[in-house]
Length: 300
Length: 300
Image (cartoon, rainbow over all chains, first blue to last red; front, side):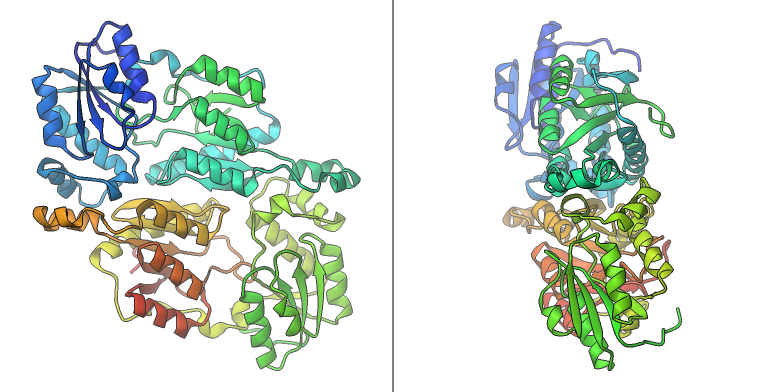
């Protein structure tokens, strides 16, 4: 997509994590003022310090969101740090405007809910821009990012993970799959990527406990039991990257390392890496390989 | 499949849980003697009390398994209570015979590993029979098992879960999917069904906390936030039901109840229900609906 002409103030619809802070920082470094909708129980309060104005709401208060953006003379809106999807079940206070969307969508996945909210914001006259308009330098194109490349085993596991992640994405299930030696260890649904990584670590992350014994049997067995895991994180085929982009950060690499995951395959041009230099340096320190790929059938 | 003529003694390859005990009990009630291969750290020791003879091995000691079965003059072998798949990574001591299978299979899912072991047992001259030969009465055919039937919402969620579970199964990922109001909450991979149920409960299991407030907005919102979850547990398309059959027990119903899952869809003729009368009675007590279906496109 062509780069948007950015207008000030930027309306920031802030979810959880450090993404809203990164976006606010980046917007300010480009000379834009930022007005923020922060969500109670979700958004890091520090984002308020970087905002011209900040309104705290509960998830689902769409009418007040639109009114605030209008009053602040916002023309462009960016979503950053998606609301933890589980909150849609637990901590959700849709106003009548949000309810109308839900009723229209009837039975739909969380992607559809986000698309509905986006359409409502566009209908009210705002332009929705993607985070990558503000963080373009962190969306890698095809290729190897780290010093170490994938091993043949990791390549095979990555190919399996790619096929599985695309199938899961087309069902609107999740974006992340963790594979170890031909076996799909963990699949992300509503719990999110971090929880899936931790689960993979609990199931298959420990080094083999019987390594003394392994020496006696030799290489073939060692290849079977000492394999590490590969993580594949892709966009869903129908995903609107403006409002919900697969994102990797230093935290992801730390979690991967702690869970025995030795390689990461992301989708070229679609996955956002926050602090890409630091992420790659951290991966290199741990010997983790990172690749971005475009081709579904032949990922690397 | 036609019922096998059962011969004594039955060779029981015992994994974890109560299934081996149930199979041994059932075999003895049919007048068969049972000789058991029990697995250290997996198998309930009580199975030894019901066995003529019981050899304790580590997972993967295939050569000793075959030798023991031959010495015991076994002709038919049944697998019961699959080895926790995660153990293949952690606690696995394949002998050279098992290694040969692994080397031949090279990169394959856990189904393929089980199929390889089965083939080896058949090549050694044994007949592998399914658990349902011994527990036929507990494999429901199409229809409603409980007093309460699925609500329209549960029907829709079950249809989505069926499609997703079949897609996941064809990728050899897992058998179980939990859906709530059009959103796939949890997907089972290597962690097993029980862990997936618990996760669904943590994510979306609590009743809405804002129910007083809900009253003010009314029915549409209530339908959104108060929905419960539906669980779908199916066989994988390529699954060899003789050695690894989807199984439901009272424990499953207790876990579902604790996780806010109100309906269960299983695959007719393929899913084993242990203590079916008790399971259905327990489901009725909790108001849980259970259905068995055969049709992929139109599950109910």
